[in-house]
Image 1 (cartoon, rainbow, N blue to C red):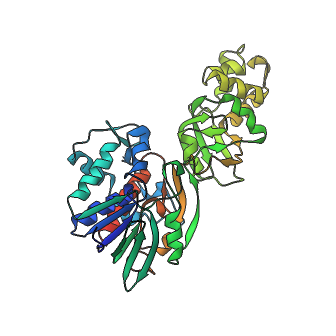
Image 2 (image 1 turned 60 degrees about the vertical axis):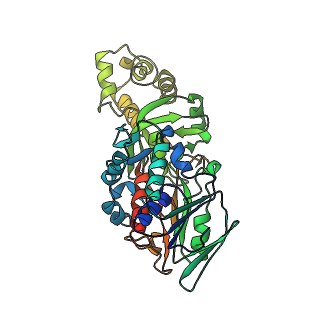
Image 3 (image 1 turned 60 degrees about the horizontal axis):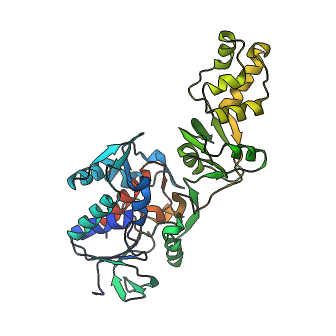
Length: 391
């Protein structure tokens, strides 16, 4: 294997392969080193195996970062339409599911094949199943020692992602290398992750398997999607979304009846005074959930026997039901990692480290985390593309 390259990329995930393809097409000699036995493992399991490869509604405001402005440059220069054009050029059939989420009609393998095909048009070498033992930087060149050989290049790209989903080989290696070169790291934490319940909230575990559309809120963040009760706590798209904003000690609030207008319970009383709260809830929610909420509200008997004030209080509770999670299911179940290599250390235009010329960081390794629904793939494409224009 040749030992000298223009660019060495660590990680053959979405961001790494995107960067490799674009850089090789610019005439760069590119080596991608991947410790797993095959490329794109996280791509392959995404979207139920169909890869939610982007989101049409991508805007910087739907990304979390210590610097909310950092992602603007890359996202504006490589858009969802740019990647969609690439998908169509490769003849991949796709569909929009909901909320701007685009999926392959077939398999996520098609996205991996697309990326590898783009890489193959240039001077590209992929080495999988290879463990990096040492990275050094001297004389303006990076030297990467693996268990097989030593490779050198003036540019090194960190694209090894974060520690979410360790069962597919995810590690915190990007942070180790960043610290080695003096770059700050924003404390990584699980994001897009189920939340766990304890205390009085444990009573809701009896609802394991029940799902319903809700509005979930945490601070200023609010998402209207499905919530799912599990044997450990709360999951489903709405919960995964707010989990990225949640911190230990915070309360999340659930509106169990987002379609119900103000005064719906009082109106129900006037229209059907013999009805009970349990029946009114069962008409709008899964029976098991309706019964659990009814038992906790303690508004017994026919609605006619309850005051309008008591019913309005019940409406308010149902629209602002508080849960205080005691934690999350951690990196093992987190779809992505929040935090990572500090954006203060990087150029937003090129993704290059300001204090270490030739060192780049892209994708999930960086402190930029998107919403659920294809946003994190779009960040991978955009940040990988941005770095590829500069290496």
